[in-house]
Every structure is written in structure tokens, then in C-alpha cells.
Image (cartoon, rainbow, N blue to C red):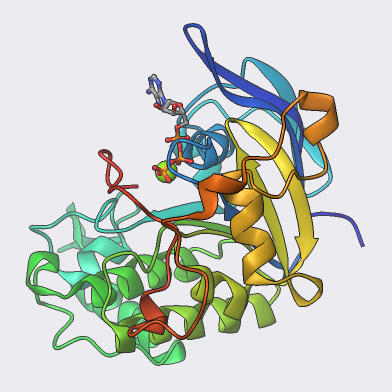
Amino acid sequence: MEPILEVRNITKRFGGLVAVDNVDMKVYPGEVVGLLGDNGAGKSTLIKMVSGVYRADAGKVFFGGKEVKIDNPMQALRMGLETIYQDLALAENLDVYSNIFLGREKLKRFLGLVNVLDHGHMLAESRKVLNRLDIEVPSLRNRIRTLSGGQRQAVAISRAIYWNAKFIIMDEPTAALGVAEQKKVLGLVRTLSSQGVGIIIISHQLLDVFSVATRLVIMRRGKKVAERITAETSMDEVVGLIVGSVPGDLANANGESPKPSAVGPVMTTSSRSRPHQETTRRRPSPSGH
Ligand SMILES: Nc1ncnc2c1ncn2[C@@H]1O[C@H](COP(=O)(O)OP(=O)(O)OP(=O)(O)O)[C@@H](O)[C@H]1O
Ligand SMILES: [Mg+2]
């Protein structure tokens, strides 16, 4: 089987800073890959080069086996590559079904003269996709801003599904969710993967990532330092790779030395009082993703 998505030697610089440094990554159809790293490791920048937000300074992107140049987010969407951000990408003041059809509204002829929005069609189709994914929202006519974080996430996922996304990137999908909502979103990730959709999930919630991802890619300071099969590693090893106390596969090439003291503030054991909140996050991301 060939990868649905592959990036080769991809690099992004911001002035003198190399935010993503020569990274390779592959995702196969139906595979869920966890993209991990501390704040500022380069995760969001990496996926933004795939979703058309940034143009790479070097490297190649392949989608469905073909090399692609993705110059803007609309182009990524048209290819079937959706990116979902917590609380972003939905229009707060529009209702649920209008968000599902945002930018791709269905029109009908009125009195054979003018084109008007076909609300009936959009409502019915939206209802179908929400039902298919077993998603409950109070009403499809509710504005997005009246929904909870998890319900918004579910609407964003529904939109991706309705438009036949072949690949979904989720940047911190569970960061602001309650426990039940986190479970729901993770359940949707599993459903999608069983339908053959390739998924990259970025999260500081290691328990979440370990529960859905079969493979993990770990970045540190712009570099991919390791790749692990989830079943063959442990949270302790992954935390060590994230913070640099475990050298990683590129350590010698980078000339880095292990920093054992860096493990201190990171929670690694499930004996803490709120294990579902296990996280490597030490400060909130200023950008929110
Ligand atoms: N638009 C930008 N202009 C300049 N520097 C940027 C820009 N976006 C990101 N950076 C820098 O690039 C590096 C990687 O940032 P990125 O947002 O990719 O990290 P991240 O791994 O997603 O972190 P987090 O977990 O905090 O979201 C950081 O040092 C960041 O300050
Ligand atoms: Mg980020």
C-alpha cells in the first residue's frame, strides 16, 4: 500500500529560525499518526505546509502518490485534505448546517428566475452526516457560538466527512474539551480511520494520542527526533524524547547531549490525581493551536 500523504525533507524558516528542519513523514490510508513535541517544536508549522497555510522553503509533499504543490487552504480542501483546529475554522454566527456547507452552499432556482439557498437540502444533508457519525447537537439551526467545544469539534469533523475528506489533520482537537467530549472526538477519530481516512493528530494529551494513534512522530526544535510504533514504546520514553532526556534517533547527527534534568516538571505516571489530564504542556500556546 502506498502512503496517502508523504512529506520529504520538508523545511520552513522564519528569518533565522528553522521552525521545521528537513522532516520526513508518511501516513497510510486508515492510519492515525500522533505528531508530538513540546511547545515550539514545529508541529503546527509542519502541518501548515501540508494544509496550504505556509509554503515550504524546501522539500516535497505527495498526496495519493503524486507530488502536489499546495499553495492555499482551499486547494488542500479540494484535494480532500481537511485541517481542524479547536474553536477555529467555523463561523461563530452561522448555524450548524450553514457551517457544514460554508463556501460550498447549495442553490436552487426560485420561480425559475433567481438562485436562492436551498436550506431544505442543506438541513437534510447535514442531519444525515451528523446521524451517520452519531453526533448530537441541540438543533441544526443553533448558531455555532451556542455550542460546546466538543460539539463544535464534532461539527468540524462532520463537515470534513460530508465533503469526503481523504485526510484529516487535527491540531490539538481535545485541548479544551471535557472528558466526555474528548472521548467522543477520539471515537470519531477511530470511526474515520476504520473508513480509510488518514489522520494526523497533534496533542499534548499523551493518553489521548496513545489511545488512538498506531504510530508516533516526535519532533524537537524543528527536527524529527524519533518515530515509534505506539505498541512498542512507553509514555516515559516518549516524554523523554519530547524533552530531550532520551536522545532520539538523530541525537548523534545533531550533536545533542541528553539532558536528564529536563524531565522534572513533566507528568508521566498515571498515579497522578487526574490521569486523563496527563500532559506535557507547560505553558499555553499563544496562538491557541
Ligand atoms: N508565523 C511565524 N513567524 C515566526 N515564527 C514562527 C511563526 N510560527 C511559528 N514560529 C516559530 O516556529 C517555531 C515552531 O512553532 P510551531 O507553532 O510550529 O510549534 P508547535 O510545535 O506547534 O508548538 P505548540 O505545541 O506550542 O503549538 C516556534 O519557535 C515558533 O515561535
Ligand atoms: Mg502548535
